[in-house]
Every structure is written in C-alpha cells, then in structure tokens.
Image 1 (tube, rainbow, N blue to C red):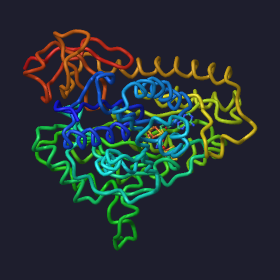
Image 2: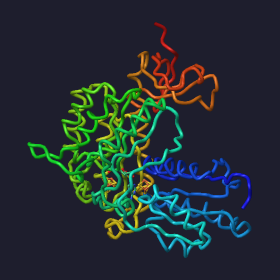
Image 3: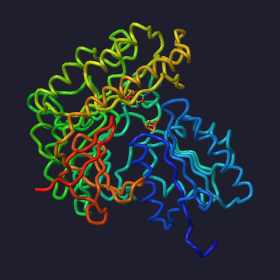
Image 4: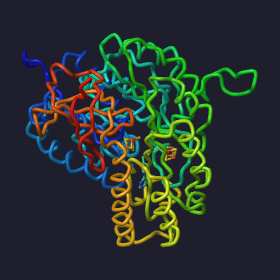
Length: 448
Ligand code: SAH
Ligand code: SF4
Ligand code: F3S
C-alpha cells in the first residue's frame, strides 16, 4: 500500500439518472478516502458508469475499457469498475470479454459500492446484477453543481415500450418515500442549493408502489402530492421534474405546476412518434390526439410554458407517410427542444426481432430532416424571449467567455450575460434578453 491518498476517476455515459448515480458513487468513494482525479490515467480506481440505450452508447464504453485493461496489465493494482446499464445487461459476459475487470455492478447496486469494493479489495472479482430492493441513500453525493441538484424519486420502469432496454436494465419501479425525498431536499436547501430536479424514468408512476389509497380511490402518494409536499422547502427556489409519460400525465399535475410558484413552467414529455399505428407498435398507450390535448391543457394554464420531447425515427415498419406525421407534430406543437434519435435495435426488446426494420440510409435521412425542422422551430420559439426580462439562475462561468456567466431561465433556456461568477453564482438575476438563438439566449442584467 502507498501512503499517498488513492485517486479515482468516473466517466459517466448515460442519462440524468446515470449522472445522479455517478454523483452518489463519487460520494461513497470520497467517504472511503479516495480523491477525485480528472485524468483517468492518474487514477488508482476507474469507474465507467455506462449506458446502453442505443448501440453507439454501448460501443463507446468498450473502446474506453480496452485502453484501461491494457494499462492494468502493466499496473495490476489498478481497480477497474463497470457500473450502470451495460454492466446490468452484460453481467458475467462482461468479465469474459474483459477479464481485467474487478467489479461489474448494475444500477440498482450503486448505493452498495463500498460493500462491493471491500469484496474486491479482499481479492475477489465481483458481479452484482441480481435485482435488489434499493437501499435508501445515506451517503452524501459529490454533486457537480453547487446550485442545481438531482433528486431520484422513483427508480426503474414498469412500462414495456417495445424498443426500450430500460426496464430490463433498471428493474421494476421502486419509489422512495416522500419523507426521505423531502429530507434530501431540505439538506440541499441548507447547503445552499437553489434548484432541484426530481428524477424518474417514468416519473408519473411515482408512488404507485407505495402503500395507501385516498377515499376517492387513487394512490395516496402521486407525483402531484409529492410536488405539494416538497414545494415549501426553505432555500430551494425552483423545482423541475423529468421524465413525464403522456399516458399518465394528469390535469391535476398541470394545476399543481401552475399553482406552485417554485415549480417551473417547463415540461419534458417525450412523444416518440406522431403516428398512431407506430405509437401502438411501440406500446406507448396513447395517441397523438391525446398528446396534443395534454399540450393544449398545459398551455391553457401556463400559456408560455416550455415544452421539450424525445422522438425516435425509423422505428420498424415506419413508412415515409408515418414519418411525415412526426414532422407534422413537430411543426404544429412548437417545441422548445426535441431530442431526436434513429431507432437502434436493443437486446431483449421485442422490436429488435421484427423483420420490418428500416434501412440505415432511410433512418439517417429522416433524422437529418427532423433535426432541421426542430432547429427551425426552436429558433422560432426563442424569438418570444427577445427584449423580455427573464429570471436566470446563475450556475457557471461561460467557459468560452470568462467575462460572462451562464444559467437557465425558468423555461430551461441556457442564457449568457456579462457578470462575475463569484458574485452571482446561485443567484436569480433579472436579465434583459438582447440576442436569441435556437437553443440559447444572451442578455444583460436588467437595470431597475
Ligand atoms: N422514460 C423516457 C425515456 C427514456 S430513454 C420515456 O418514456 O420517454 C430516453 C430516450 O431515448 C427515449 O425517449 C427515446 O426517444 C430514446 N430511445 C430509447 N430507446 C431507444 C432505441 N432503442 N433506439 C433509439 N432511441 C431510443
Ligand atoms: Fe423505456 Fe418506455 Fe420505460 Fe421510458 S417508459 S424508460 S421509453 S420502457
Ligand atoms: Fe442509458 Fe441506462 Fe439511462 S440505458 S439512458 S443510462 S437508464
């Protein structure tokens, strides 16, 4: 053993939940006495927190791993960990593919990192992928931001969208109790955090696995109830939540968002396709008409609400006409942001086995056409900010221009303006918008 502190490096490949897991695992490593190393090549322990949502996400990790496995052959004391969704999907097979690995651990095991590493330091190679009841998080995460924080509220997903690998890698839904969630947010408020984003793959499912029903027969602890329950935590000025599923999105939730001043007028509601037959084949459980009604209802309560979504192009069997319905929906709704992806067949998902796959050329062409439309529409939506005064919560210095700081509006638009980060970090500043682009804004502090 060397006397100097051991150093760790984490690379995070996946979604917000994957990032939140990384922050908790980093917290555990620091409690164990490890120190952060920016450069993986200086670290004694490297953890790859992986994603398998699409083929390219999965492949990225193997090239990283190859390099570190090579290094481990020279430096046997190096500890190599693969966590997250590829670890869950591959399990033992990953050890056979990369025998240099010390630990393969699924996302449900993130909070158990200390235990698992102790087994590794005792000399075992460990695979932890069995489904478990997720233990309550008692460690202090090492959070990247000092201003905004993620708070998991529900793990896993019980849906069975036919393209999606998440249920098989993240397991069944497990909601945290409202008390545990509130306690975490109160602690964040005490530490000076200003914004929280409540996280779940299908956040509208929050609470359906918790005991209790109301006299009207609904679950006692829904997302809406949770928003009311955490809406007055001292110090926290903004609350967001993601990801919403159109199938479960209620008017009661929309009313709560309109009523509660801290809940931002920002909604991330993936629609995936604008065609009802494709939606059916995806097993999404709603129609594009239902989706439009949700957006209309949101806008009837909050006319200026920002809306973002995810879309897949080239799902098996998608015809040109069906794809055009997706274009039409994007044209008509006026999204602030749309995350787009070409369909990628995933292991253990039904759609991957269908014979009516769309060719890569057609997928690429559709993706390009959709992205073009998305940025035109986002630029149009940005126009409404021009000349307005927006409240911006300041988070960072602009890395490309050190005279500027950056933060987000309530609608989640990235905004830059001149200012000193040391003075402004964590403050909500009124900013007059002087320049608009498709996905970001520039302004100056509004004089009053
Ligand atoms: N729970 C969220 C999304 C989770 S995955 C929801 O229900 O919408 C994030 C996004 O990745 C999805 O919204 C989808 O657009 C995309 N995605 C998931 N599986 C995919 C696949 N097999 N190919 C391409 N994109 C996919
Ligand atoms: Fe995947 Fe569907 Fe669950 Fe979202 S709701 S994580 S797309 S299975
Ligand atoms: Fe990827 Fe797992 Fe998130 S597959 S998108 S890291 S849930």
